[in-house]
Length: 315
Image (cartoon, rainbow, N blue to C red; front, side, top):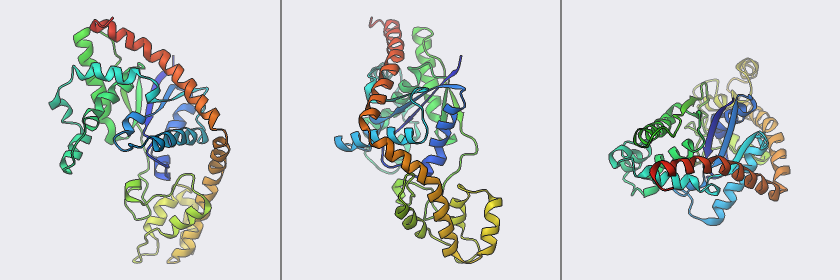
């Protein structure tokens, strides 16, 4: 039998090329490898920490589904659904809440980071690892693809599963992290890591005009022949062997190199942009895909939830 793979993505706005090369491409590649039964969910409940506007949440969730379909995610081979459409996620999280402790959750990176920055921490941020554990454990997940910096999330899920199993009997499978190797850290147009919070992104489905504006705004270092930030982004779209003659012939000619980068990004983005526009014409069909995915996810999650409730005496 295929191993079960699960991944969730928060619907926090337009994806950029950093999101694509850093995670989205790998998720679709893992599905297309044929090695896994894949669950991909839109983590709208997790996103409530960032978005507290109903229309924005609806729009972002639908857009994220369209994005994944445009990138080649086949809903017949993967289960694509919204987290909020499977109530077992939050019900199981409450059950787990009663076997974890406050000091244990205080060790979570997200909580420690928020506290260090002096932010008032809401319960959702503090409890984030418990809901994430429920997301993972409901489906007898074998592997969760994550970057090395997100490994703690899987460790929390394993700890909570083990604690429940010790208290109530063998119930949950212990998942493993699938560390995405050789994942590019994509620089933004200012040289820092590409991030919406830095406002330094190149949108994944950008128009030609948006690409031109973003690329011409890339910060360049006038001290060398090769503009470091331009070259770092360019390497995502062409091999170093392909780029060498171009950069050798245009030493110090930053405008020429930026124009070449515009052409290469647009050549890559254009078919994705056109495919996305075609899918977006039929939003009803996308909603049907999410509805079908939720039904398939519920069929699995409800079985695990009933088993769990029997173990704790709720049934």
